[in-house]
Amino acid sequence: MSNILAGLFGHHSDYKKIEADLENSGFKDSEYIVYLHDDELHSQYLVSVVVKDEHQTDSASGIFSENDVLKTYLFENMEIEQANYMNIKRFIDARNKAEIHNSPDVKIKISTAGIDSEVKF
Image (cartoon, rainbow, N blue to C red; front, side, top):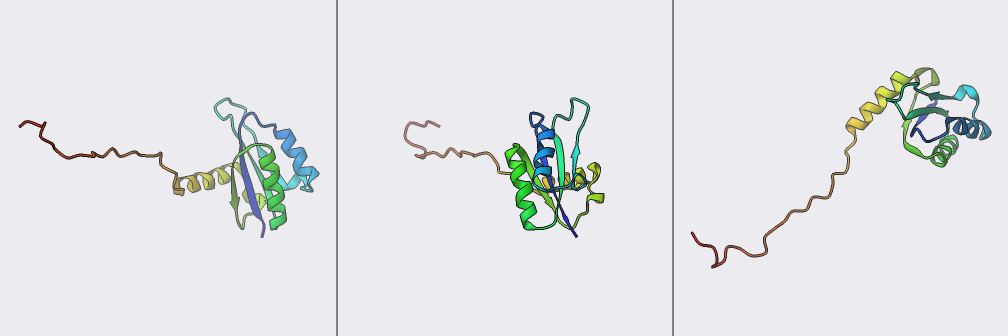
């Protein structure tokens, strides 16, 4: 069984270049899917690639990095037939909800001195 490597790209990335890079590195047209949206609400797009071994995973990941990927996801034991947009989006949403995000730096201000003689009751 193969795996799916999915990458989330910003609107500034050129999906035609990603397609060309994938095909030049040996991926067939039937081994990747580019999910595009026509509306302006979805400025990001998603690319899924079938990877069968570690070499293909590294190759596709490198192509994603060269094209300014925002985030990558590896889905194990998934075929390209299962990689429709709604299915991939559901898995990505579930992973993002389960991920523990870094919290911003919290500075706790502590007093260096206790109550002194200047405090009147």
